[in-house]
Length: 125
Image (cartoon, rainbow, N blue to C red; front, side, top):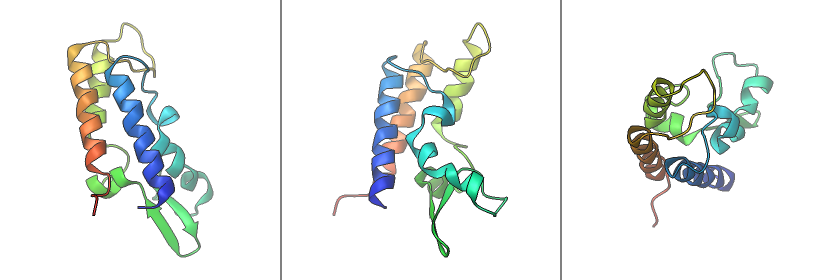
């Protein structure tokens, strides 16, 4: 794993720990460090099948988001993130892209996302 990707993964873990504690919301890709690292490919790359999960390193080399690499699907499906969003939408009085962990179920889903992201960290040798 490249250093920048590891830092983005660690930032995502910290972000989800804060979400689980109710300190900050998830705004989906708008405040995800991994999405920020990999989203540029969508705008710059001439491969239309690639959405947000792969970024160009040079003309022949690409790097895949560790979430995508693990799930082998585009975006964050099927990760605990989807469960968190579903629970948050059910408990939101109005439509918003700001998802807070307001209920025990949402906090539990956020903690599951933390565990999932931690599982993507490279194993210490």
